[in-house]
Image 1 (cartoon, rainbow, N blue to C red):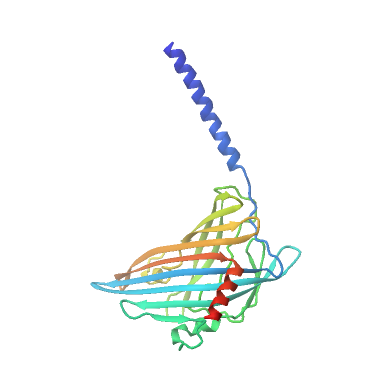
Image 2: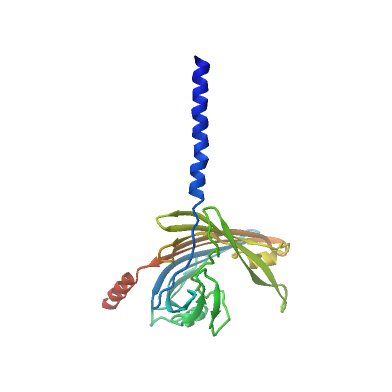
Length: 297
């Protein structure tokens, strides 16, 4: 009798375990097309909250720098061609920044404050406010062309990037796609070297037509020189992006980094960089309401 019951239980368990992979296989088989959808005269606004901390240590001496920034930016869809490529006019609307060295009084900046005296370190940021730049993006986020008049970049210039690359083909949950690019580092007074970087994106989940995409960044070249590693210490972030599949718009980006480099001072000392950046889609009506409230004060 016991052997009979054991056989029945074994048979039932075998059926249940056989059914599970089929269910999972059906769920995993769903394919998704990830695309940006550009609509003429559409405005898309984002609020960016970022925090960067740098700590340098040599022997018993430590120095800390903390940089916090709040940015409002937007893009306007100027035109969409037959292939769905969108001509976007991008703009930084406002930047509020605070830079603090150790325990000293922080230096602050607000691009909306017309009465403040702009410190020299903030002048490049002030110059970028309200300056439009047109970029043509494909529906998968590939830059087709841009009309940037100034190619010079400064370390303090806010990141004006809006879109991430999307896969050309349909993807299932767990599928990945890659973006490869180069970053230049200085190897001498006049000599520069290109370092290959690979960013890997993965479709983590899809729920209520919101795709959750995770990414990580890797340097594809072995670096034995701490001076080179120091220049790249903030170039390998990881994060999570949420994409509205119906609207074809990024809802949010949550990016972070925590890296350290030793031997930065002739084989001694160390540097640690910790940063976070949260970018969130903003309702234009809420922005208009805030502007009205600030004008009445």
